[in-house]
Amino acid sequence: MNTRTFRMVGESMEPTLFPDDGITADTAYYADHPIADGDIIVFRHNGTVLAKRVLAVGGETIEGRDGKLVRNGAVLSEPYIKTPDGPSVDREATFPARSIPMDEVFVSGDWRSRSLDSRESDYAPVRMSDVIGKIVYVYSSSHPGQQGRSF
Image 1 (cartoon, one colour):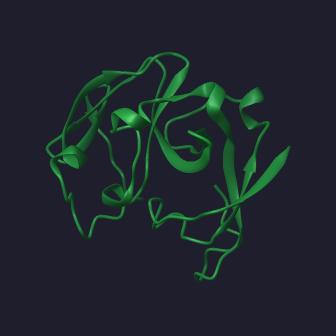
Image 2 (cartoon, helix red, strand yellow):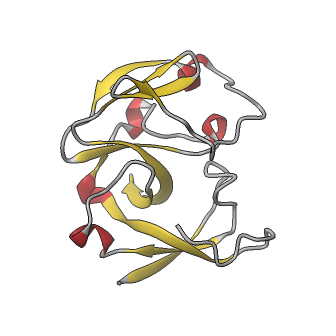
């Protein structure tokens, strides 16, 4: 395992990851494993490193319908999302079906109303060449029960 550490800055991955959490990513993981739906990854976007959850991989179709994500025709069960504030704008709940190219992944934050992600054209599906690695654990956190959490 080759690892690299990062510090969470924003709220977009709450309640899975919190601002100021220290996270460790395995930068060699995808050399031996395929990227999978549900993986939490770090990737480069316009010179910034971001952390998001993979919700669709190359060859899959995803859409936002009636406030739910629909992958390959099935509504996703997403027990990890933070929903108390609900969608603040229509784009969070509805977007047209997209086929994800084979060399890309569709990502989103777990706190959708606080996340800029693949639902936005500026954050269109992430190229695999921009993926740095898979988040494997939280090495430091001020939130109870968070430190030492593995993924």
